[in-house]
Amino acid sequence: MKIAEKIQEVREQVKEWHKEGFTVGLVPTMGYLHEGHKSLIERACKENDRVVVSVFVNPIQFGPTEDLESYPRDLEKDSALCESVGANLIFHPTPEEMYPNGFCSFVDMDVLTKELCGLSRPTHFRGVCTVVSKLFNIVKPDRAYFGEKDAQQLAVIKRMVLDLNMDIKIIGCPIVRESDGLAKSSRNTYLNPEERKAALILSKSIKAGKILFEQGETDAKKLTDAMKDIISSEPLARIDYVKTVDLLTMQQIDKLDRPFLTAIAVYIGKTRLIDNFIVQSGGNF
Ligand code: AMP
Image 1: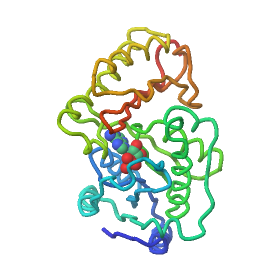
Image 2 (image 1 turned 135 degrees about the vertical axis):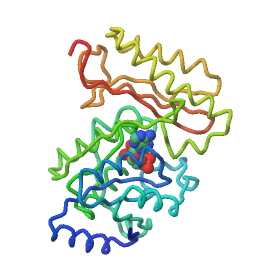
Image 3 (image 1 turned 60 degrees about the horizontal axis):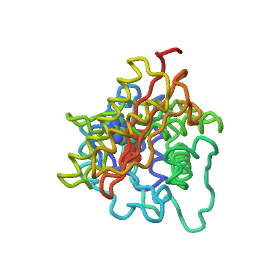
Image 4 (image 1 turned 45 degrees about the horizontal axis):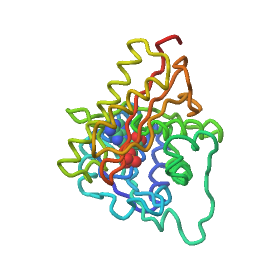
């Protein structure tokens, strides 16, 4: 398996693949790969002839006080995982390769990016849309794979592809969890043992919210209030948000009468973690 640092190398490789009639799948990541990323790569390998995994800690999606410098990195381990699953190429550019001097073009989005994570991370989705657009232009994939773990990101990318007429199929993949329920995340490595235990409050509240809905709750506020109560019982947890939004528009809803996303962001100590559950159908719709 190849590791390419240069955009030109990727372009040449993909051109060859396309000439041979191969389909190409792309899995964009920030590296420090775990079972969650692995599930996306496996799916991409199943559905495409060739698979590119990008490993790039994208500086422009981090806010000024966020963890860009300390974000965990381990390319050697990442390439071993990609190789074991059957990916064909890792694209690992430097920030200078992606954002050379003079770079000043961005892809931005309204509405969907103003809710949930967009409130506490106002420039985050501009960074995500820009880097994903660049990756799409570089790799020209037939399909691209994103996790439901970042459900708002998935909705934003789907909307961007629709709005900007990008000819790429976006595939959402379910959340992979640790055996005790915690959603896998590269940021879980920031947690000390006491915080790791406390972090279980996220998946506990998600599970409780899901059960309430399945038992017939139709009031979004009642559902999120019950989840907030559970999270507040953990002294190390500080809520950023607990919200229920329309799955397509990311706008808050009152009644659970359409496909929806219940999403949470919670600080455990200094570490901000996210989790969610999605309901595509069921209830009264
Ligand atoms: P990241 O490296 O955190 O930017 O994540 C890269 C991709 O992997 C994104 O599409 C994430 O949604 C996805 N991902 C991260 N964690 C998980 C997980 N626990 N389960 C499923 N997908 C995940």
